[in-house]
Image (cartoon, rainbow, N blue to C red; front, side, top):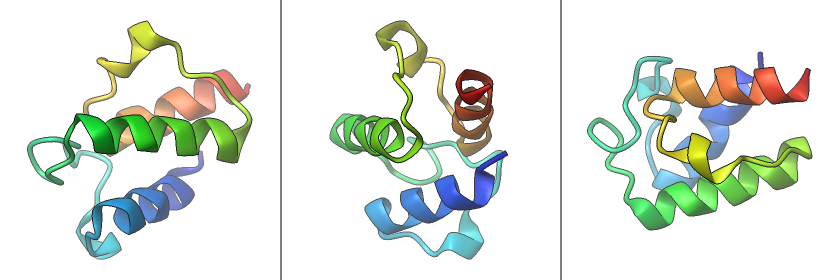
Amino acid sequence: MDFETIKGMIAEQLKVNPDEIKPESRLIEDLRADSANIMVMIMDLEDRFGITVEDDQIMKLKTVGDVAAYVASVKG
């Protein structure tokens, strides 16, 4: 799983201490991401991992762990 990489990307984008980010950290409620942050995160994930995040999956990505699991599932 690419949790550490994803954690670093999210920490940098949201200006959050990476030590505060756990798999159960909620993107909006805990890390204060807004819809623009989420869209930038999705684009960064697609570029970094060479994947496509389907629109219907975006709303299902509630926690950092959800994001990592999704990336792992589409990377194969």
